[in-house]
Image (cartoon, rainbow, N blue to C red):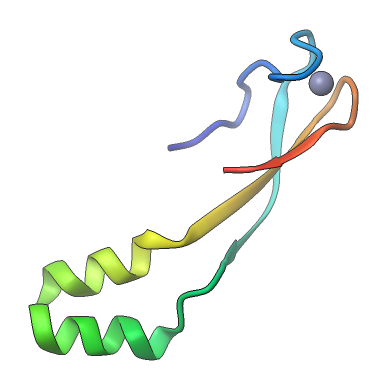
Length: 66
Ligand SMILES: [Zn+2]
């Protein structure tokens, strides 16, 4: 889900802006193994499971990872 432009959960007047993303805790190797065992479904699940996007509020500077 994309939270860009949503209201800040802390100050409620700022808007969230995506500042970066990372894939945490899940190696590409595991995604490949998932792809071998489960086919494209496993590969997609592995690729999507741990993606995190960091957002910062343009009002108060609050940062959150979704
Ligand atoms: Zn805020």
